[in-house]
Image (cartoon, rainbow, N blue to C red; front, side):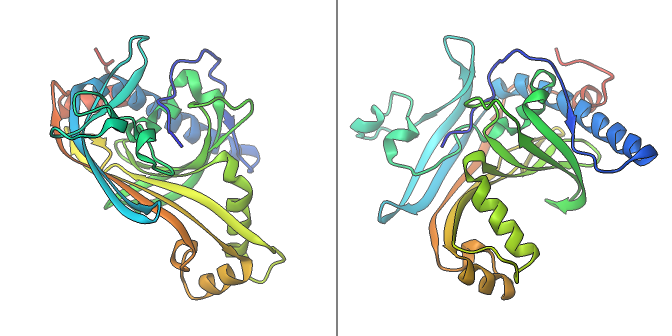
Length: 297
């Protein structure tokens, strides 16, 4: 599984709001939603430019293929020959790995046998580029705390037609209520909608009628690195689990999640550290661009 950078696709900026209220309440909800999407669009523009201004270290750990594995890479963003924003991984020191192409070549994660991975954790924010809003439905989902910050929750759901690397996920993004920077993204691939929906129904009503086996994967991305008011990925957790509904109900009654029932299929963690930034804007420039009082150069 690869999370794309939502590369350029033309289309109108049609916002489909899932508002269930009526009258003035609906107007207020839509106004707040539109404002949130507008500011997230500005943040996305900042991220598209800043992506070319940092490098970091990436560590991937997990248990899959019958063994516990760990990899470490030098991680950079750049442009492909076609102009697409992409990331590149390199071994941090000379290693003999024919499958990966050696230490001088960019490492292809597909060659390492990873069952799932997020290739561009930075890129979740690009869902909110103005020209791509028509690819998802959006719904404000209340307030909560995330990474010790007050956050707004915004649900997103992919709508047809689906495009690879553009709208393959449903989920929730928690954004800083003051700066509109991303804090946490929780997402599930659209092909796992039935399993996720069944699991949510059981959590809402453990005595319900859902039967059979449930299986799905989820991805949680944390933006825990802060530089001059902008946030960058610190951790990605990919979990896939399954179980019979009876086991799941028992786990829920015990206060456990699906991934704590002992039926985990795999769990992969990608972490990012030792960022080096080059020409990143000042905190004031980031604030002004987000509020619409300045445009990124």
